[in-house]
Image (tube, rainbow, N blue to C red; front, top):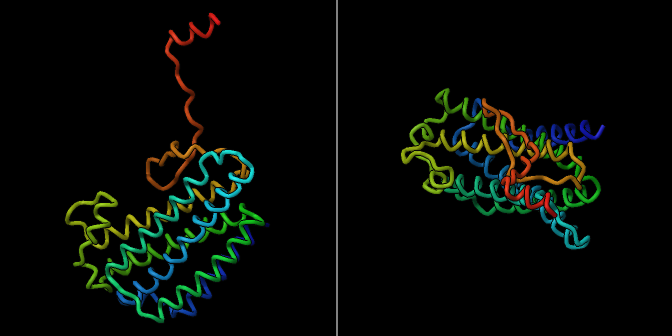
Length: 239
């Protein structure tokens, strides 16, 4: 039931925003795509920060370690913020656009903050489905680019900050940046669905993440047991 609630909330949010913003990939130019991306990335950076902040405060209250969740959540928020600034190299929003961002952030932050206090599980499932919509959006953007509807971006180089951040080739293009951003969103999708499947007290080994051979799935295997030297084993047996 909780999964259906999360999925329904994402679909309602997506469709409402599509109607409000006049989303039509067949007719969108670079400016309209940039407006959509910038607005969505300002929202996408909120859940990880709220989740990390709440778990941080709970760790302080309970005097217990968090075991890796905070690291993942704050890293997600930082990564989404980096996406935003990569795209801001191409567009400087005006005052009305900034007001809309502030209003959306205020509404979403407070709503998600309360929801995370009630059910972190359903919130992570919600973000997992939300990130799937982000992957779908960037896929449509790539299709529009490949179809020749975004002529300016066909010849546009990726920002230097993005090239350094992703360790791209010096001649990387805008398409390369979009591919990397989509890959990030895919990772966030898998991580949040994984978090939704775990009890909130389950330890997360953030240094043990594996990517499938086709680079489409993430897994979180338990850390390998520490292998001790034979001399250490002998010393333990003597005690």
